[in-house]
Length: 456
View 1 (spheres, rainbow, N blue to C red):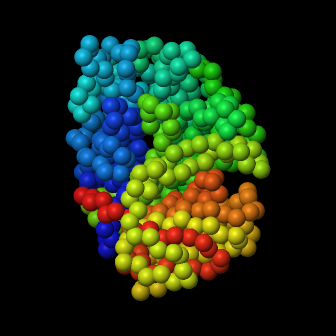
View 2 (cartoon, rainbow, N blue to C red):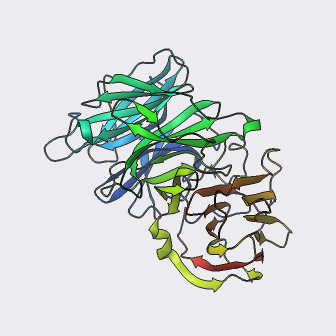
View 3 (cartoon, helix red, strand yellow):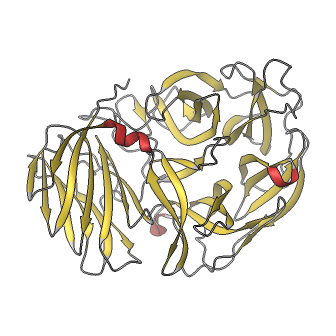
């Protein structure tokens, strides 16, 4: 970004344009991150799948492009699985394949295809692609595939206009449709994209299924947001069981979209990564040879609240291992780093401001209406879009003390509060590094400098 360095803890592409995370899968101690990629421009174009790997979700190694456009079209979003039983037949006796399931996008419509790899770097597209033809729906894309243990089969959830469809398969190549889930209760109008479906246990040990759907909405509704539903899934259909008292966003900030979780993590944790951007201005933000940043990985859980079950987030434990210098939060604190972490507790209204010598200010806190907020109206460069400078709110459902965490990394801020039921991802582009933290209110907190992770 012009005038700014590259984020140190958040994943960015080596060059060009990046949007949705794709094909999140864990195999043999390695996390694989694929992503929507246009290597030849800093704006969206013919989509490829970029590829990177990591052992800790912080230190990343960039690998060659995994999938390139072909005669069937651009390579849109999708998922990846580790086919440990070689149900697909793509593997052999010595090596099991990673199989990617993705959307081919062309003027013939959006259709689903597969590719596989035995070295987990070079991928071969299936000769009989596409494996699922378009059923006459304009927006039919972003398949998320996972293994359903109870029936020993593969299941797929795929976006289909303003709803999702479900499919099942025994071999990742032949698929049968089993059901649909569409608008009911409170939902956001718009095209449904990048679905995910997975189980989590409640504190009582009850299993619930979480359906995540990214919503491509109009500018007046906030643009790109991600909604979730809580319910049951039987391998064929999803039924929402938690009354939708209001629309449930996974992140109440403006910059969290197309998030998905990793397949095949042995302990069944659900680690979530999103594209920290909004389609309203994604192609206009300042750039320095690349555009696009992924959110910091979060672990998802279900917690009981005064209004029922809620999906909650927490940063992965690896963040704690990066802590270096520790300082007590004061009324004013000088900064000499552009990447830092704050943990705090407050008993009511408060503000924390990041300030530089250009009088640019990024502010967050709790207001007089018990709302968590982030205000980037004066935070820095914003003339690239009239929709960028704004203030964002998340109504608290608790009235007692508030615990919060805030991670700032060069130009992207992520705040988690109230046991992770409030999550706000907000980008800001100061023309110079913030050099001071100023606080108001009763805050008991710690400030941490973090290990400097080298980026390209």
